[in-house]
Image (tube, rainbow, N blue to C red):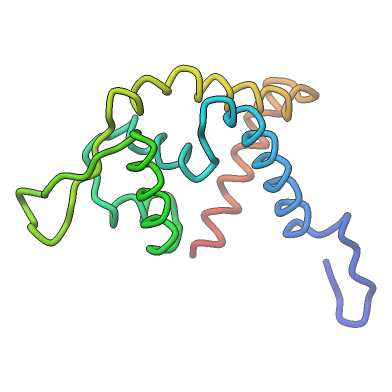
Amino acid sequence: MLIFGMTFKKSESAGYLANHMARLFALALHERIRPLGLAPAQFMTLLELWNEDGLTQKDLVQRIDVEQATMANTLKRMERDGLVTRHENPDDRRAQLVRLTDKGKGLKDDATAAAAAVNEEALSGFSEEERRAFLAMMTRVIAALRG
């Protein structure tokens, strides 16, 4: 517990350690998916579309928890790279549906294998029980911070 006036120790700060870990995960993922022509933001978007194709930009913003402008830029790049197309939404003419192209669909196995390799490397020092507990604790922290 941090008490006013005490020295801040980053080695005892959950926020600092989580941020540092997230940066290292992102860097490792970026290195593994770069040969596929992907950036981490594109991978996160593809994960959602591989799970459910035909989402709106608003859906993607909510599911990935990024700013609208960030998602707009990511989708623009993905469209340029031939990973997705945008189509009129028959239920809401103001929104467009984002759909995977064959190229976007074709990256699923290699990209998810790359992400699995990063996870395996990061958690290699954990037993199966420790892995489950660690993931459960991270999930609880995320839930607590979301409110």
